[in-house]
Length: 559
Image (cartoon, rainbow, N blue to C red):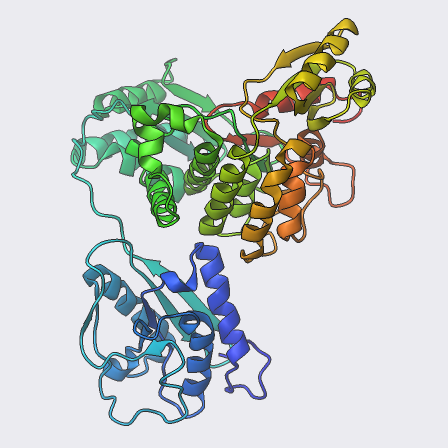
């Protein structure tokens, strides 16, 4: 458990163990205080136990109330050290703990190690059976440290409550499933389709969702491919029959992969104005991954004293609330992170991310820069603070020669460049009377102007009053280096590090979506990303349209 940097082969190091625990928490997107139990490596040695205890205290014990320390156990006290299998034994125990919501006592603890801090560590070793909360999500951490310095730590979460099984042959809510098949040859693809028909007939109890999920994510993609869509078993059987007979069918698509291999995918996260009542309802009902993230976000927002997310999204009585900045922004961040989780569960993972305005919080979360809890906290503070600013502003979208727009705007005080969405697509914001005068001047010069339906002049100096609340909240957040390239919509460049001041500049400054999108597509600059496939993460496809327009308006030779 030393990470390869200890004084000896078998000498553990606290810093290495702490680092692997922290890394596991970050990848899981949870905070140390959300862990209900830790299964330690716990070999019972004079050297190893104090080192591991100190590492656990530094990660899981910190900040715990004195009357609610984190319980720690080790299965080795009951079954001994299984050497190469020791880690899996600890994992099995942790799974049973969260499943049965109960921590068993540590066996044979008669003389506590005097080298362990038993009072100020924020940890405890149960010597009697201890019940965990009967409801809600439970999480456990599991450590396993190898003889040669290998450190491993995983986070286990209780499974969601099982839903009543749906009729395997029908999908009552009208959900359509996609079955992806592939093979080395056309003949093999036909044979595979026949095997699936046989499997369907022999296993009438297998839900379509499970069948399709297994095929779509558990098999290697091969050159000859087909995708079949169906809402019922009969429809899927008919589609498979059409594939076997090589007959044209609207629910069967055949193809081969494009030359050059898999595309490089970028996720684009939309901003305010794309929301609508009921967004995500069908996905929530049909996809457990999506629903789980939304429920987690709902719990976070409740803890923050905000309106319950699920009611805000799905209850028609809250349609007007969803249009308000203070509620819309956290709702969008939650929805977009859930959508990203859904795409990733289907095997579509981003090589880079780019957000637009508040969508940058969701992009940063998916890139690993901040946790979902912190992203929602900043969205709540940001949305509330912006909503409290004077609503005397206006925004206009301008399509035309950018230099003409900039030159005319420069002659109008209290008007700011709010967004550059494309080479010929700019958004201006400011005091309503100033924007009205500017609009008239622009239209006289042949610029197409469209007023935006907004409550405030976002990304302008009129938002200055929202800066300090956001700065204060962001200073309390722990930011991390991006796991994947995160392109800033404030600069158009990759973000290497971020702090509270970044989010203030992002709030008040220009959204440079066009520059960020160009950076994603860049194939000439050293280290260019050259993303060639884009997935919009949001309720309405606005950024894809902006991207298409940007490509169409780009000078020749720009890709």
